[in-house]
Image (cartoon, rainbow, N blue to C red; front, side, top):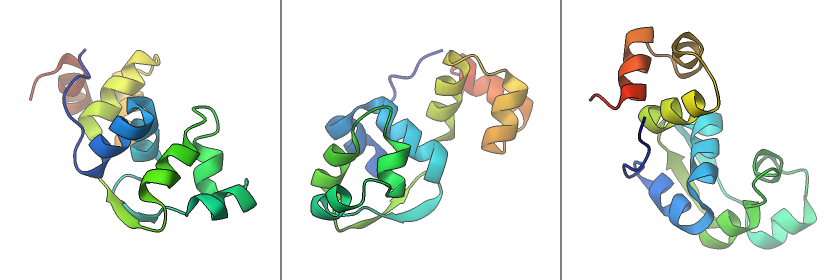
Length: 115
């Protein structure tokens, strides 16, 4: 199980700014969608903003907001990285397949690092 491969699209930039766990958390929540990132001052006024709630455990919402605030970005699904992340958290291939809309065999391949 390896997760050192670069993340697709803007997720790699988010990983550089706020850490890989933050980028993967965002991909798991909003992958495959266009997401508006609030400006830092908006995030400060609205601590219940979905970005703040999503990244509360990592404490990195402000880093993401400082970097991308005011922009709308497409977040790729990053299924391979998400599968590895979920497997490390203890999810079974079947659970990963269901969560990421994959077949169980694809989930197992991703976990093993097979393309």
